[in-house]
Amino acid sequence: MIIEAEFVKSAAAASDLPREGVPEVAMVGRSNVGKSSLINALVRKKVARTSAAPGKTRLANIYRVARGSSRPFFLVDLPGYGYARGGAQSAREFEELARAFFGRAGHARPVPSPRQASVSALLLVDARHPGLESDVDAWTWMRQAVGASALVATKIDKLSRGERIRALRDLQSVFEDPVLPVSAATGEGLDELWKLIESLTNPNPTARNRSGPAGPPLPKKPSPSEHPTNPRKR
Ligand code: GDP
Image 1 (cartoon, rainbow, N blue to C red):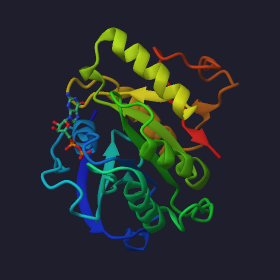
Image 2: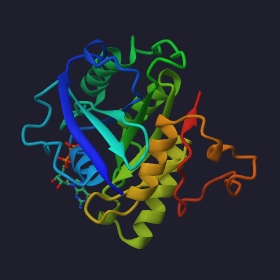
Image 3: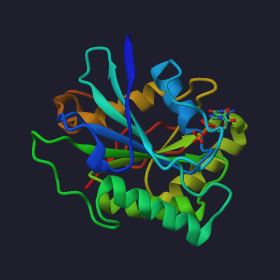
């Protein structure tokens, strides 16, 4: 499958994003969570720079990405929050980002009409650190403010078999939502992540009709060993 990815621009706020009616998928996460590595692994080339100077730039990098015959979308690589800090400082950083890119903190951008761009987001959390306060705060905010969002656990290759079962169970219990485990290093979970992104950028395909004959029924409660690809929708 051919994947096209090109850098479009850096932006300080959502108002600077290109307005082309193309769906947006924002990637959110703490600095060092593995966001740049994951973006590069997804598009199979080095578009995102891995963090040399963590927390320095407050700009989002926008990429236009198209995979196979799917419609293109903007991948919005948001600056990481909370590097080597925590608590109030980290919460403030996230709030600033949220305000700039998703609307006023705690309030969603207006629900887009069909001709406007859909806005969705992935929260990346480190599989080795389930339930960090800054991540939980970020998810709490995203759940209510972003149209569709989903959780991804990075660096899953760093955990042994036993550790990963425990970590995924902890993650899902802390966040109360399915978490997709991935590894930029081994490529694990990337196909599932593409499916997840496609479901975020293409919210109403018939293939996602859960009760219809198009696909097998989804499990009601995903177990940690399964790879959930169903984003949470408001
Ligand atoms: P960012 O600050 O979120 O963009 O994080 P980076 O992509 O720069 O990654 C931070 C560090 O984690 C780097 O040293 C990466 O090599 C490492 N890393 C990122 N993803 C993975 C992964 O999937 N597996 C492993 N083992 N290391 C990773």
